[in-house]
Length: 70
Image (cartoon, rainbow, N blue to C red; front, side):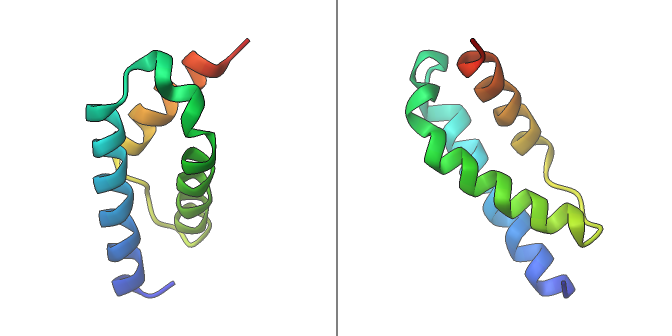
């Protein structure tokens, strides 16, 4: 993955994760399964190419996992 693509994916992951974190209450996270799966796929592309996903992505994924675990 070239650096420009990695930068764009990082920015998209950061922005979308931040929006989800700000605008969704924990009890609403179950409705985000499709969006979260898309985020996960993008983050996997980045990590497979040796890049790191932004911290806010990990925060939102943690919230999602806690709220959908059962």
